[in-house]
Structure formats: structure tokens, C-alpha cells
Image (cartoon, rainbow, N blue to C red; front, side):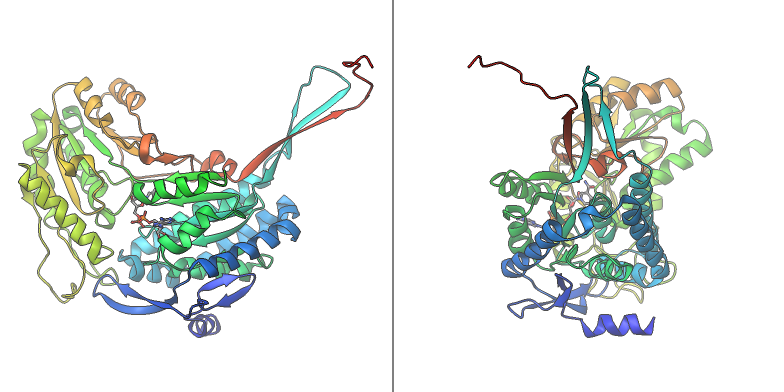
Length: 509
Ligand code: NAD
């Protein structure tokens, strides 16, 4: 362990990895990484730019065009992915802590993230290892052998956000490697540390030189260059709608494959019948809290829109606000803390702006709506914001239409099932949503009508690596995880072999 830490310290500013070398930015620029709990720098990374990006893409291109990885037997690729999972387990504490400090989440959340990253590597290892190498197609003639095979796409560019830095990266890196691609990843400029560490683990696991590359740096330089780069075959982006749209536009010029995992405005629909028993009521309230406030609401699938049946609204919202006000905010590394700070001053200012606009538009503040007092667990400079419940919200409010990405829950009500479905679908996004009901028929009916990529019945937030993740509408294009999440990183090739060739005589001469 001492050796690994020393190696990482030595390369503190050399966080660009291209063609097997750890490099500083070619311009010499660096960036301080701040701990969101106190706004103090705790790490320094290279601030790469277009030149560094070109270097990394060239390395990935060489490794794909002339390297061994695309042709490495599937069993060997799967074995390497499993080794990476084992290394993640070995470094779980260190990486969980790093994720906590970088993104502001609790250490326990950081550890869970690392477990999920290891699961993604194992899942894609198992998926490719268990597959048939191709699909024989019936060509309607004994003289033809026709088979559809999968091949890697080529050089993949991956651009990731700050809320689940390593997890989002792993949903791209694991399937891309399983499929035989090479890649350049660009993590969010404010939370790059665990992704840099993962590249170290890929090298340690024995990945050939040039297959895995990383450029730390901003979106408008490194990210934009990756999206437009003529030597990149695919760009997979997770982030906000505005940046995602720019990526799609930049990628169009070279007709590369594009996968977009964007934002959400996710409804949590609660029917009165789910609250008839004390246990049902307690569970629905508890999960509504979790849906909205875990990681301070900085979750693409956060259940920030509570849509509750009018008859139980007052009781439900009163209990929700009572419990939200008791959530223990503080530095994620402190014992007993349940929720960390927002990731940046910008993210907190954005949240404050949303709350102010909601209040100006007539929402009623039931709890929160301000920064908490500093305490020993909450340093003064930290980007903390109290979990906030806004009652009497409606569709026309900006806070109901747009993604807040902060600890803000809005409350809307309905009287009929049709009204509940109409409200839940009344969003330009379509990432995830939930329905709470004790009526099994209603659960299935409503789930069937929701236009969202994931629908939970009597639950919120769980996902499975073997089930596709992604959104309808402006929540994105394509899917991660599951077989479709592997298919993103492949081209299909039809190989048609004529076993008895003869002239076709279409042309008489
Ligand atoms: P963001 O769009 O600001 O940044 C995401 C990434 O894109 C960063 O690495 C950033 O540097 C880069 N980027 C910014 N401008 C770019 C450009 N012009 N060209 C190329 N790259 C550019 O998003 P964020 O604030 O980091 O993350 C929050 C957003 O991510 C939210 O909208 C959230 O819903 C979304 N998200 C979605 C999912 C999902 O699975 N659908 C998961 C996590 C986060």
C-alpha cells in the first residue's frame, strides 16, 4: 500500500495518461481540487487542453489500429476485467474516501459507489465471457453460410459528470473494454481523482499500453475536442442537457456514434392506498426522503417531484418535512453525518436560485430553504444547503420543470389515476419515476403508462447492472448497463459466404 500511495503522490500533477505515460499538461497548467466540505484545496491535477487530448487520442488510435487488445480472446479480456474488480475491492477504503472528499458524499456512499463499480466490471466480464461469438443467419440456401459478428467500435471518448464520478465512468469503461475498444476518458474537472486512480488499476491489471487513456481538464477544451475529433469513433457522454446537446452537435460533423445520458426530472407518485397502514405510510415517507435527498439531491434519478394523492397530502408532507429537517448535514468523512455538502459554490447558488424563484412563484416553504449554521461537522466555507420541501407547487413553476440537482423536493397533488399519470409524464425528460400503491393492478397499469427509462414500483433508486439504464425524451440517447450497454460499444458485421460461387449473368455480355 505504501508503494502505491508514493507512486500516486509522485505523479500528483501528472494526471494525464497517454500511450502508457503519466504526464503533466503540455501547457504546464494545473488545477486545485477543492473539498466541498470546506472549500479548501486537497489535491492538484493537470489542467489538460486540446493538445493533450490529441496526444491521448493518437495513443488510443494506435493501440486500436495496431495493438493486440481488439483481438485479445474474449476470455482473456473478461479475466482482466475481473482482475480490475478485485483491485477495486482491495482499494475500496482508499477510493471510497477519495470519492467522498472529491464529490462531498458520505464515506459510506463512497464505499457503496466503489462496490457498484466493481459490480459493473464483473457484470460485463461475465456477459462477454458467456456469449456466443456470432449469430448464424438462415440465408435460405444450403450454399450460403451467413453470420453476424460483433466487432469493437474503435476509439471511444468518454465524458463524465461529478456526481458519481467513478460509477459513471465504469458504466462506459467496463463495456468498452469488454468489447475490445480503446478509450480516452475525460472526468469532470472538479471530481477527477478516482477516475485517475482507476486508470492506474487498469495498468496494474495488465491492460496493454495505449488502451486506457485519460485527460483531466475542462469540458469546453478537452471535452469539446474529444467530441469533434476525427479519430474518435464513438463519444459517450453523461452530464447535463446543455453540454450534451453541444457534444451531439460537435460529434455530428464526423458522424461518430453518440450515446447521451442526460438529466431527469423524476416523479415519485404516491397513491393514498400506499399509506393506509402505518407501516406503508412510514415506508413511503422514508423512501420519498431517500429519493429526494440522498447525495443532497445531486442524482440524475433524484425523486425531486413528489406527486401525492390529495387526500393524504397534508399528513404525508408534514411528516416528510419533519424528517427532512432532522437530516444530519456535515462533512462526509464525519461519523453520524447523513448528507454531505453540494459539490460546488456554483451548485449551491443554482439551488438557492431555484428556491427563490419557486417562492416568488407561490410555493410554500415547509422546511429548509437556507444554508445551515456552521458547526464542528460543517465548516463555514463548505457548500451546505438544508434539505428543502416546497409545497403547493405546479407545472408552470421553473422548479418543477427544470432539473435542480440539489436538495429540493417539490409537492404536487392529484385526485385520479389519470391525473397522476399525466403529471408524471408532463416533463421533457424521462429518466426514472416511481409509483407507490397497495393495488397491484394499479401499480402495473401506471408503470406501463409512465414514459421513463426506469420505473420503480414501491421502491426508489435501485438499479441492476444487468438491466438497461437510460432515458426517454431529453434524458438521452442510448442505454448503459445490460446487454444494450455493451451493444453501444460494438459494430455489427454481417459476413456472407457463398459456398458454391457461380456467375449471376445479370449482364448478358
Ligand atoms: P455537465 O454537463 O456540466 O458536465 C458533464 C461533463 O461534460 C463534464 O466532464 C464537463 O467537463 C463536460 N463538458 C462540459 N461542457 C462540455 C462541452 N462543451 N463539450 C464536451 N464536454 C463538456 O454536467 P455535470 O454538472 O458535471 O453533471 C450533472 C448532470 O449530469 C446532471 O444534469 C445530471 O442529471 C447528469 N447525469 C446524468 C446521469 C444519467 O445516467 N442520465 C448520471 C449522472 C449525471
